[in-house]
Image (cartoon, rainbow, N blue to C red):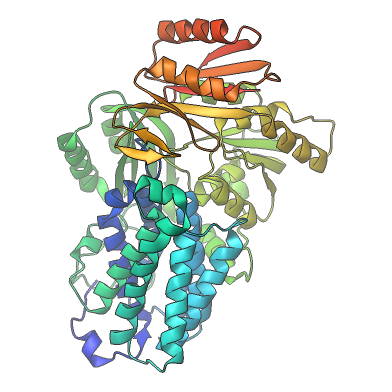
Length: 573
């Protein structure tokens, strides 16, 4: 895309559709550039901070839709629709969902105008914040919502004062947003103890600062390096109905079984770039998420196998999918409340017989996946704390389960909002989200389902069941910090419970036992231990014996989970 370095001097009182695209793409590039830094602001010093990754992937989905627009005929409505539908469907994690709602609310105000003025942008910021707050059941201050509201308040103040030029308006709004962000630790004590500002709020500021760079006409070459960018800076415009250069959208996750250093990552990315465009190659812990458009998906798959085992493999013919996707995006954007996206019958697995009720769950680890399948779950989405599935991932799963009513178990607090957003977007199937926040809660919820009971009774039973489950995860700290008044040092083992830190120590098993001490009460009957991929079977058996010795009145169940990063997932019921 070409940039006009003189735009800000030509007109500092209005922003048209083409210029809005410039701002958006520059914001996306800046968010991508700060992704890892934002990840490190995670309150818990665990090796899977993902706020920056979630927000970046959310934005990338919107960038992809913007880049698919005909550059010679982009209206404000087209641009807003692409940003809204792309971010809604691509939203990952709570921060990504909130960001998508901010963008959606903003677009509703400006989409019917030819140009954005300062007063209009102020109104759009107000609507954006209202939309985002409505999407959160229990809004918490000291988060991205607080930062967004501060930005909105400042925007309204400036507009009311008669400010009409963006040269003044944008930097003042961002400056105040920075001030609000700096105060988030005073509003959320857990941030102050950890010594960080809110990561979602930081991501929002990072995005807006990039937008300002785009407004100033600064070079945004970084955007051209984004997976969704397909054209060089001065490439000629495509025809209104372009032929697809690459036919197959290919995506999969590599579960790494060998060292994946910077050289390996660079080599894989270079190879994928040679096969097509829209390349995603993102490492998250022991996994690499791959996505691209190509004419030979087999070559990409063969390359991925060289680094480990493949999961969540999806290959779609974009020529066949294009018409249905466009219709779904249009429906999603035009709805005033929750958008409606009809899952295509073509997406339903042909071999799956029709049933009244189906189950979808999010899981991480081959052992845990098998447990869910053994309990009758119809579709398991690979994901979790290391890689939150998007709203669209959940919608696709809904399309593949041939049932009228589908229960979705997110099994992670950072996936619940995306699951609820998917439920709102689903039109032809009823989707009920049971807000499970841990794997043990998900397992209990499925067990508590009774086929002979009605929908509401089952919902109540499952919700009641998960209330009886106490969960914890054992992993290592990636930095020094203080959390819940507990001093934590890098490489310490931590037992993280439903409400915070339960135990910290140097020894993995002793830390897990100390966590269980806080979880097990007189009413506890069963302790379940799911051991991860880094724990040998004999080590897990030895740990089970220690648990039996410490809690001799309880049954202790040991099962292979195979989850990365977390050595043990524990539950007490």
